[in-house]
Each structure stands twice: as C-alpha cells, then as structure tokens.
Image 1 (cartoon, one colour):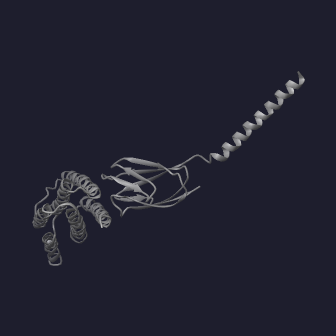
Image 2 (tube, rainbow over the protein chains, first blue to last red):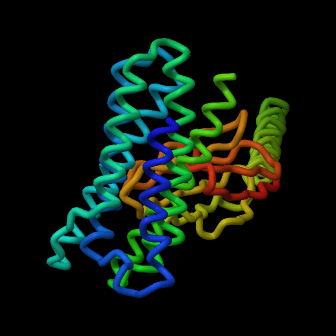
Image 3 (cartoon, one colour):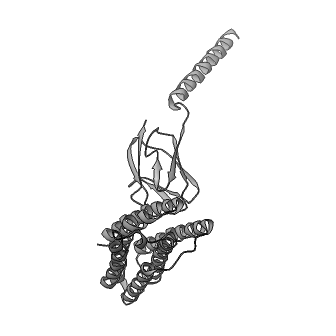
Length: 174
Length: 115
C-alpha cells in the first residue's frame, strides 16, 4: 500500500505542482477522461481480485457493488467521449495510477483470509480518498467541457459514497 | 301470523341497523384514500430529501441514475432501486424515519409518517 499510495500521491503532485505555474500544465479534457476511466478500471480489477480471493460475505458484497458501479460509470463515460468526439489520451497520471495498482494487486495476491480482507478494504478507503482528492483539486476544476465536468461531479459523489461504504465495511470487520 | 310478521320486521330492522353499524365502522377503519409520494433520485440525491406521509401511503422512488441505489431504514425496511427503474414501499408504521442508500451512505433522506 505504501508503494501505491506514494505513486498516487506523486501522480497528484505532478499536476498540483504544475497548477499555479501555468494553465498549460493542467490536464486536458482527453487526459481527464483517460484518468477518470483508468481510475474506474483499477477499482474493477481490485474488486475482481477480491471476488476471487475473499470468503467474507461483506467483502464480497462490497466488491460486487464496486464492480457494478464502476462498470456502469465507465460505460457512461465511454458513451460521453464518443458523443463529444474526444479520444481519451494516456498521460503520466494514468500511467502512475496503473503502475501503483499493479503493485498493490501483487502485494494483495500474497495475502489470504482475514489478512487479505483487511488489506483490501484498507486500500479501498485509501484509494477512493486519493481519487476524490484528485477529482476535487485537479480534475473537476480543469475540465472544460460542461458535460465532462458534470460526469466528474456525479463521479465524485459516487466515489465519496464508496469511501463511506468501505469505512462501514471496515468497521464491521473489526 | 301477525306475531311472525312483527318478528320479521324486528329482524329486518336489526339487519338494517347492523348494516349501518358496519358502514360506520368501515368509514372509521378506512381513512381517506392512501396517497403515493414520489421521491426522485438523481445524481445521488433523494429529492425531496424530506417528506411527510401517512400510514398506508406508498413511497415511490424513481431512480434516474445509471447505478443502483437502495432506500434503507435501519432495522426496518430495505428497498432496492435498480438503475433507471422505480421501486415502492407501503408505510406500515408511524414514526420519524431516517433512511439512506446502503451502496452510497452519503445519500440521505427522511420521512415523517403520521397515523
């Protein structure tokens, strides 16, 4: 988790550091679309791993909720970029997110039973917090297209809901 | 003969009285017709967030989002509202009820149910 959080933080800092300097360093709409989509894909992958590994009813139910919600949101995001004729563009933030997620999955793959459940839900809380921070501070303020901005604003409410839901599941585990 | 007739008359009168009582009871037991209160869910918001209703009324949630939600009252009811669908619930008890979405606990609503 330390590795992943560092990478996510670094990714956020990448933009945050550039923000006051010049507007050109803000992510563009095609990049924002790519980051948001990638963030969803990462959580779907994490959910799939949890569904394969966990035996805990609460964890499995939570993972199913994550998979279902993020798939629905990403489907909507794809429909929007198609409508807007925007091609999502890969960028350092998306790359850093994907790299960190891969490391986290590798770490979680070595854990079993209650240790896995605990690590998975802790990471879900940390991950949603990070994404919410990036949405609020960087992605939403940088988005130009009103429909993209609108989708991100709904997205952050969903992510905040997931964060609270994850915290609830964590408290039930203890 | 005449006594039998008068007996019939008494029975008939009793019957009419009984029916009248029945209707009177029915009028008391069945209050004004039950209403349906609609709550729309859009962008993770219950709207209106606060509603009032009576026991026997139906609450209908209309989900305009692409994701599933629930309307859940702790230790009471749990209504699943699929994406782009509606779901409803008949209120059985009076009370002041806080409810939320189990999937997105940041979504909150309130119903005041009177008798």
